[in-house]
Image 1 (spheres, helix red, strand yellow):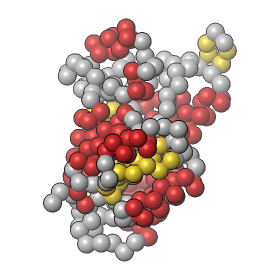
Image 2 (cartoon, one colour; image 1 turned 45 degrees about the vertical axis):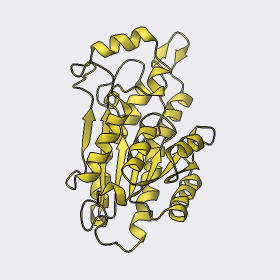
Image 3 (cartoon, rainbow, N blue to C red; image 1 turned 60 degrees about the vertical axis):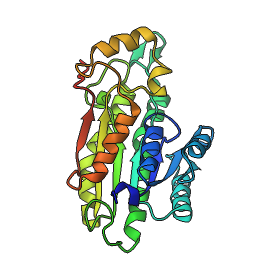
Length: 260
């Protein structure tokens, strides 16, 4: 029996993109999954499509009550959570100063609230829930493991680009808090890792980027010379689950892309 098949997982941003692919793969491998996404998302339809081992919790990740409700739903529907994958995020392209004036604090704060504060909000509440229960024997990849939290940063948080100040700052923060949180939670038997994906074929990318830019971007990727498939991201999530020594690390998944 695989480690994944024993898990109950929460996947934020699970209605589309990387989160959707992650939920699909986890359920295929035997896990039970709660998709967390905004009430007006396709979360309910996605959960229904994935099947009976998946359900939807309408969630704004910045709101404590919403996250607590999702945790409670997981317990009622399935069991205690052992895996969290933080895929929820937004991107706004704004230069520090443009023809309309300076970058607004409203836009900057919005991105930081969802991508950084929202991620931390889910981490702190889910970790607290993980440590409350008596440790079941053989939970997770390590015999004394209570849970695993996987966050999503971005190569743009490591290689910043013009017009992406807020997004880059928010994702750099997610990457930077990986190690201290992993060390904080080590005594509780909880692992924490972050994946920093490059260019993946998700609605966030394809719906907001002109084709000529997408074609140009593809040429920057050394190998394989294409955009990533969301299931390739989900494969790495599965690999992190299965590898008991991965903890406190930020793993790039980008085909050697370095945006300069």
